[in-house]
Length: 68
Image 1 (tube, one colour):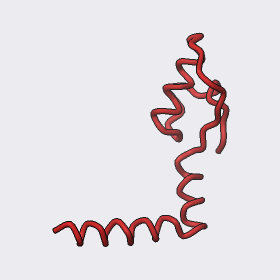
Image 2: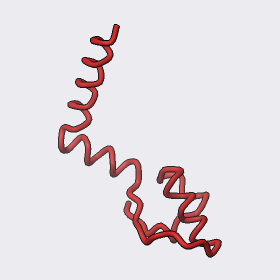
Image 3: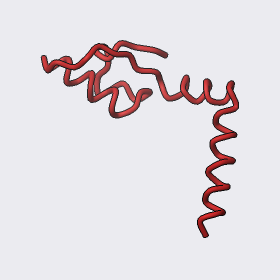
Image 4: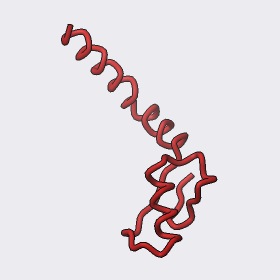
């Protein structure tokens, strides 16, 4: 799901905290640049469809192995 920041509230648990907090600020009348939020589920789907997740995990474990 993709939503405008001003559409987000505390109840929107499918989005990250930062996006929800920006939505709350906008709805309280605080000036925040326009933006969108992408749900966590769609973000993960995107990463998996592009093999970014597996590549990221592989590199992370390589770095963790090299640091010991």
